[in-house]
Length: 165
Image 1: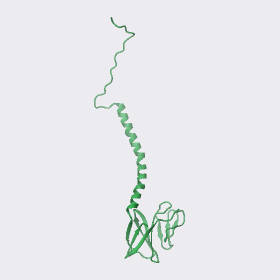
Image 2: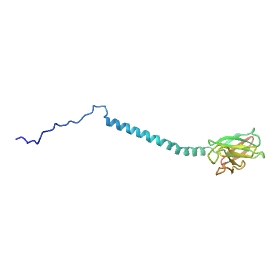
Image 3: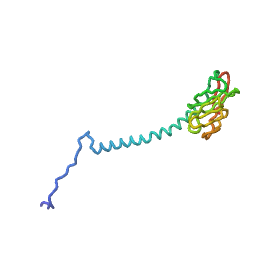
Image 4: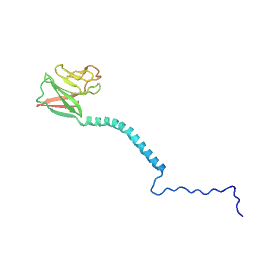
């Protein structure tokens, strides 16, 4: 006996099979979305990486350089020499009394480079008018919150050895 049927019978639906080797539209859209997301995350993450990495690089650079020897035979009294110490600007001052002072040349206010003004016997930051004492590096006036970093300076035979304390 045959089984009774209830209403018209629907034809069997066969699944759609994609040709081999060709991605579906959904797969292509997913791939593009994932790629765009990766680019977005990279664009946001790279500046943060550079910012955080800079502090570590600076610390390594600071630790690597312990001293610098400078030829100063031609440096007149009451004048200064700009040089690099650990990748940063520094200032070596030969005072009129034949003493030597070595200081960082980076203003403690907004990191501008300072200069020695022998006629006024001061170290001056042109950015915002900061003034420092040329013997000690102490901030005298203006907006700088801290003194300049001092280094040890030892003179011998026309050379000055500048080192960390």
